[in-house]
Length: 249
Image (cartoon, rainbow, N blue to C red):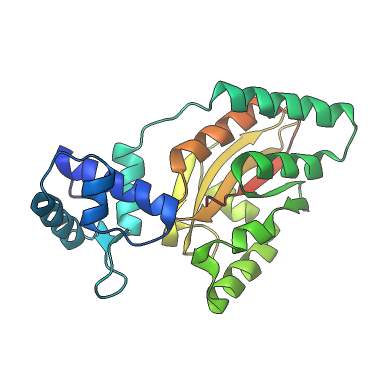
């Protein structure tokens, strides 16, 4: 894969940040005015043209700004993003909520789904073997990426059969690894407009478990990866399978 120079990486990172927050194609003017880039508008436009030529970004409509491609997101995740530690406040909140839910003797898979949904703004699905609980589907499908009826139905149908895809997902990720699938690389068919972060593990009984986040390709990758890693650490061997489907506004 062709690499970007340092200036292009800064411009591309700003473009991804803006598109993640707004879901609106990004133009050179907003990057110049909002992100304090110390480059001329002409330089930004020229570099965006280069990035488009290399298929890191594309223009969805005539006269519109640009949005990242699957290739662009993959480059960002592998070469620019870096790791992000979960904030201490969020770590404490997650730990306290888990302890409270255990003390209340609530159904663990359901309450875990609610906790993940509240912390990540995500649809969370949790379960053991083929028995799943979910929370937050409405929030997922309210994202602008799924406003078109065809896309809405395609994603909803694919997620209805999520339990049938667990084995296929686990085959694509090594135990202990956290892997990001973007767009068409997604192991679940029918949701090529989404990305998925997967982190499998084993319980002390030897059963295969999984943590995953699925959401729009403009998701906050570093934050969600950190959330999964910390949740896995807190869970220890108490849970078998957990899938969190991300909604980032």
